[in-house]
Length: 483
Length: 101
Image 1 (tube, rainbow over the protein chains, first blue to last red):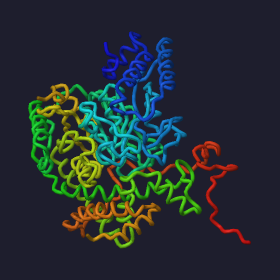
Image 2 (image 1 turned 120 degrees about the vertical axis):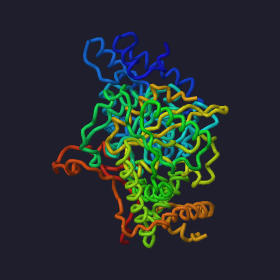
Image 3 (image 1 turned 180 degrees about the vertical axis):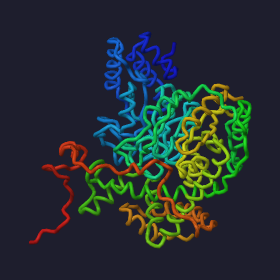
Image 4 (image 1 turned 135 degrees about the vertical axis):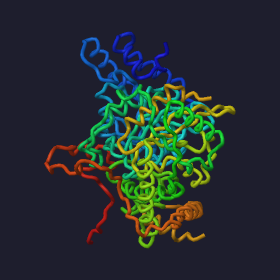
């Protein structure tokens, strides 16, 4: 029995039945990390002592017959933009290279309260800005399916860790596709709930009207388990929604007959033929399961990338103004006065993509350009959201490709920022509208090296239960291994 | 090209970013090209459309307001633990006001 390849429920069952100990499970994961992470490079930091301490606590509770949580003894990884008390939180940026988190994000707090064991913090694009994890200030992460390719981004480390069996599940953050796209590239399920479903307290802010925390897992059920634990109102985050959390896991294992699934024509132009083939097979499978497939139109889709990159850079330029070398993080010694200290600190601390986005955001908010760019984008955001709300009058679920292409080669898109931005073309729309989305595998490309392809399912605000039910039915019908 | 080097330097100044002359040269065509792609939004007539600053959804009541009650947060040591140059309970920065001689 391989302890690193099990699902959450089966692993927890073994631990609770005392067939294995949580400590053995954690050690098995660190042994695999020791071997595999030299090549994959998913982790920025590991915490074996803390992890073994938490595992020993779970083992003691079970030995004493005490009740344990739904994630008892489950090893998880946390993206390095989500604060985990006592550990460094770098956001993969040199400017926060020595920053130690003074508190736990509630998402982390809730995982630990449910018995999860944190193994370490994972690599990502600096401040979650990127689609390949190549913008990490430290090193790139490699895709476990083909080490010459990117794992996607920005949550590439969290995706690669789970795909390489170096964690059972993980947390990422999604602003414009940063969970769903790496899930697609690494052959995992990855989900972003409705805006406000999961508290962002303790998530280092990139673009506040778009940021989400969400889970990666190897099965839909695992994703449902983790989302169940981390979802819900939190008084520390005024944008967290005061809407009851449904029982996502209880809603699985049901049939999906009669569910109306919309297929927007706009998402099937300009994608790689193999991606299109796999997603079409996925749609055919949903039809076979009894879903009604309905062609729909989301007419403003073509404007989403421009709209998204105006809004997210504007918000980023404001959020990242706090990195000034005064209260925390790196401070450059190359200065004689305060202004120079700010400028030299930000010069030495930020990487190229972060500087590019700060400048774009500053430009679109600057006097004379605010109306033409930022206000215009906010209005287009209304139109994109309206497209979805009108579509959901007629359908329950929308299905699209997650990404126009499978995982690309390291270095392939680094020279042209706009090409990199286009990798997010099918994911930014749901982010702008604030609706929930999940990416699930729908087979692999025919040609070597047989790369995973992802299919995205979207639903109405707070309709996560139905979204997970359809994704789970798809998985149980063999959708992940479509050939 | 609509954007000029002086625009890049001006924006960098607004954003408190130091840029080398090489970086200005590298960023100029990249920013210019991205901004041109962004102008695609001008194809749309939005004169009758309300801007959207935040995701809104039908919820029972506005949950964002809580009672304003004092409570314990970080103490001084915790707040200063990550500071690059803490001194005597303060964040120390270069002198801002000149001394009178």
